[in-house]
Length: 281
Image (cartoon, rainbow, N blue to C red; front, side, top):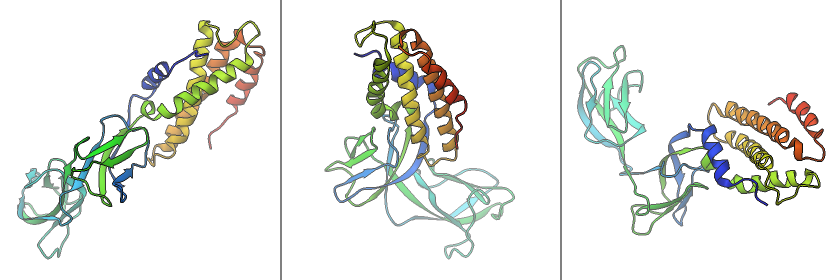
């Protein structure tokens, strides 16, 4: 029995969630074996940028003149966004505020003053920043996108017991890989147990296939609703509610599509009433 497939389900999920969630500078601690995990699963393949600090000591650049709001190129690019200090002098007697007194482009290695801030036009400032290097997959590390596992490669730039930073994306389609097989089994078991006697697991009616796809998507959307709550984003609750709503819609559509093949089509009415009164809290 196989009324739907993983490929069909993934196509629907790509259509549902084309905008991935992006995470930047996530700290990942490698253990004594050189293995670490991102806090999210289901990373989009090849979306990662793995970064290692060049030095624990900040790079110091003196006498940087900031005029108007012109971007000034520093000596290096690839700088950590939360590891910069712009000060009046080497003694750090006055430390300026990011996004109030000055703007910073960490990937490009640029700074500029902001009009109305505390940095006088044409002033020279002291800047301290931390540099990173981007590591190479299969040379410095390997990655398991499904579970967010990073493993250092022998002979590469990584060492055990160190902390790296990782940029990456997650999406519903990539994150659902681990759910799809179980969801198909759950959905098809439910359908099989309610089929009329003239139908069975070998039936090839298109209505059963469509209903199986819709019911599988309902199961997966419920799983993605739970996953969304763990994202840690301000939009997590709204995202979760959106997946819950989709789960309702797919489940209702599934049972209506399957109505001609079921022993007890009246179960749809009970399901519909229950879904109409359901509220997220």
